Image 1 (cartoon, helix red, strand yellow):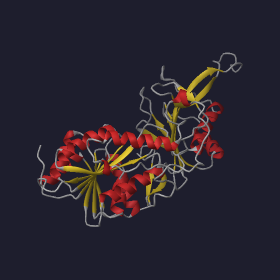
Image 2 (cartoon, one colour):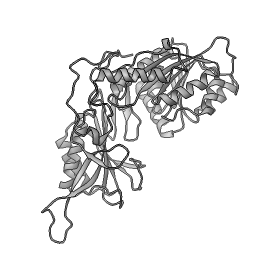
Image 3 (cartoon, helix red, strand yellow):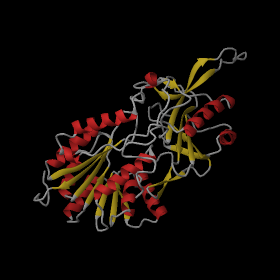
Image 4 (cartoon, one colour):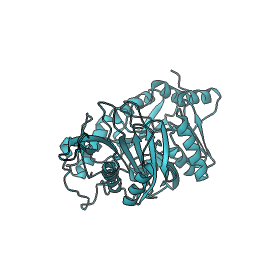
Length: 422
């Protein structure tokens, strides 16, 4: 596993980790604590975790939060909407509507009002430059930004993904229609201005919805995906792939999860909510005898299988299905599992899933959560079904925000029944 010293740390940042104040801090609201010294942010998050987990974990089980050395420009995925702004004076020709400025940036908290930003303290600078380049080229090519109120206009969003180690860049242009006039010339000029771009994809979304991406897409330039390395493994990232936006801290997160799992080379593990297989493949590469990944999303499982093949990982398999049902079937067949890895969405795990986990009765559960409140709720359920919380490790995945990622190691208590029943 990679060392957590490469770009991340178990302490507050060095004094050099400073940045100027954000000029749109109050308007945007995305970084709730950008003006607070980082060491103070980490201390506040530690205190919050201690208060939340007080009823489910012994104080000795709580580990200090893992922060970043350089907690700025860490977001390797940058998304921006495009929308018409104020009318530009003196731009209208006879018989034509006056031109409007094109807004890009981010939505103000709790609204769809765009806060125009040319820079951001937490977003990748090259990605942000590409967002601006797309905006500037729209006027040159006569591309109208999307209007949410009428459903008119063409370009809705740009999504830029930057490979943390590879440096490859994927730009996804989300359009309100499939026909993209002069798309080749547009891409040629965009790549000329931003030569690090390796792929440009057009994603078509004609629905009036808050969902950014549609289902149809076509590649306009390059292979249509990028490759990036994480924990020594290579992953293929497309426009639809889930991939953590802070790769530096993702390596820290996965390193800690694998350490807590205690793999010795003899364990069979289930990776529930496996997605494209990132944590499961890392486990298979770093100590598990066998990993079985389960997810309901067929496209994600296909990507997981491709990632396994691409990395030459032969001791991991991925299946499409409900993880709870899968665990109940294994329990009924008497097929034991040593470790359960789970990383559910913010809503946490369902009671049916947790009951299935208790029925399967793995010796250890490593539960990664992006929502400490639902994490505590689910750990309470597991404690009532024969498990004890041995360790809680917070990780600061999103510095300057309220978000906290937590990992819990949960073990079956000695003397617990071989199968927990509801």
